[in-house]
Amino acid sequence: MIQNNKNLIWHAHPITQKEREKLHGHRSIVLWFTGFSGSGKSTIAGSLEKKLYQMGINSYLLDGDNLRHGLCHDLSFSLHDRKENIRRIGEVAKLMIDAGLIVLTSLISPYHEERKMVRNLIGSESFVEIFIDTPLDICEKRDPKGLYKKARSGALTNFTGIDSEYQAPLKPDIHLDGEKKITVLTNEVLHFLKMRNIIQD
Image (cartoon, rainbow, N blue to C red; front, side, top):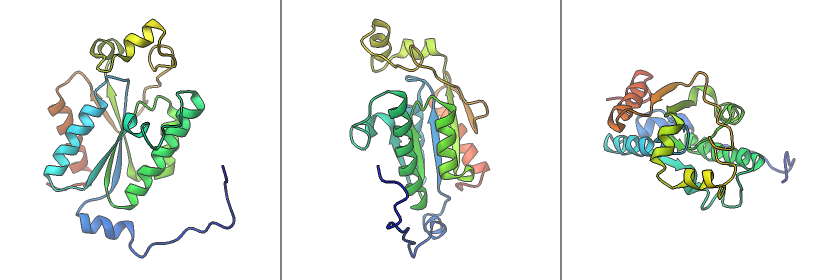
């Protein structure tokens, strides 16, 4: 990987992020949903994206599983590759912020260090960490993709919560109780966005 190539020069675009935000009528920001597999990250993020669409707000959902089909298809679930997976998604989210969008990301992103890396990359003012706090036993009972069953049988290794650690956010910007109804949790995030003047009614 080539780094700090002196022949590469950042090209400044004539249209700024602020101008794009003005065109869209709302601020751009990253909503980073984190939690165990089965915690409800993708469901809540999808519900929120639908609400934002209905409100005429420009957004895009980056789902961790979907990105591993393309952008990150070459990465494993080793510690090194997981970090690279998060870095790549953070870089994509940063570009979408510049485009003036509200970006929703749904990723387990299990480690403090990696979430902090993305916050620093994007900037604290544009990064909202949302912790879907669903107990592991509830996630395992849901097991929508059958992954916990595979992990328990040994057919799947490095699975978060079973044989790989999840470091819960200590001070998330939004703390959601994953056992509540999806509509309630969606409205909690919408309320936060309105209170922070990111979107308007």
